[in-house]
Image (tube, rainbow, N blue to C red; front, side, top):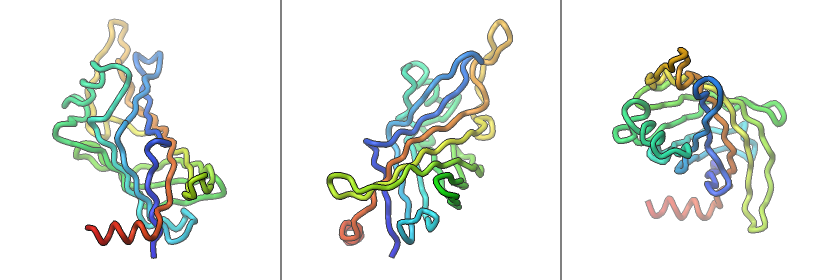
Length: 187
């Protein structure tokens, strides 16, 4: 029987960074997201399912005006495309370092990506829950996903870089077998 792991949203963070005016980085977050991982054993190398989604309407960059612009058709078009989605294809580790390959869908464009993963370890918390921690990093080209808007300053600099750096802190919780059976029975 597969082991199911679910993200602990109160101990996880989905973050991205974009160069702004080519002099500083702007950091953004997705505040609503979900991740399910299914493994054959407690070893994540046996992962058979890795599915992540983030609600585009939950984007936050500490600027309401910028957030509204990012949700518009210039970027994510959050009204039409409710979520971005990542489906993992392969997780390969070498000690605490790993790579995760899969398909990332933004808007209506799906492209393969490769992410770097650092396994932080696993532990049983004070409440008896089995937890596992990961740091996930990577980089994508926003233009490859149809996020083409940009402007040029008087000095000829672009407002936003093409490269988007991804940095996620992920804490997974091993689902109790009884809870999983109970959930299946209610579906």
